[in-house]
Image (cartoon, rainbow over all chains, first blue to last red; front, side, top):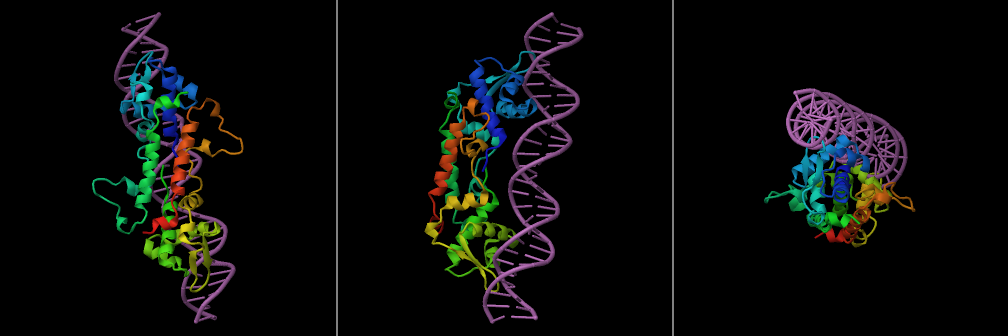
Length: 134
Length: 134
DNA sequence: TACAATTACTACCTATTTGGTAGGAAAGAC
DNA sequence: GTCTTTCCTACCAAATAGGTAGTAATTGTA
């Protein structure tokens, strides 16, 4: 029941950009040094954030990354789900479109697990990136 | 961010005993067949539950396991934490006794993570085993 | 135009965790 | 004494986590 480094690092990248970015492009080298995260690992995480539309990125000299929106427009839940994949506590909760777990008939706990999924998502969705910058 | 099979199986064992036990000793063989969980894997899980005092177990012919308390006296959160180990979403939340994460000075998110830990634990602690038996 | 800095992409790798298996000792009922 | 069952320790394979490595593409600047 852990958030992996990907989720935590992604949040730190976004916080870093919100804190030090000022609408300028910031290189991974800078973020890597400030946050003490391997630059090559950052690349992967930032690539995911970029593809999700959370960042504007520019190649080349003086290139880097910056937020594509204001900090208060980012939902922390969205960021975490984007890099972590699903956050559902058990697989059966993730089924969709009327497909259900083969055990669902005899399962007493599905509502319990769905409720857990709900409280987690509601909580992380109640924060914006701005809330994480003091 | 997943509950492992250990947590889910443990809950199913407890639900099975609460549903079919009637204060008799139930063998792992029976539980294994009803729940379709490998008996040798069940052994490990049940051993943990037993050591935590949640079960009475008896060896030998006609032996087996039964609940040591009434279903409404079991807290689902306790059962999950017992078999899963900690459920804290990030390591820094698990620090104790004034020891804190080396990054805590510069960390903007620790309250966010602690809050997540809180809502998860509050939720799973709001259920008793009885609530999982319809 | 060369070159330095930077992102983008693809592949690979190692350690840890998950989800089990296996074998035998101990205990109790008959 | 034998059958059934728990108890205990060790082992193991596949998946996941947490990176590393190399190189191509792009852009600013001298």
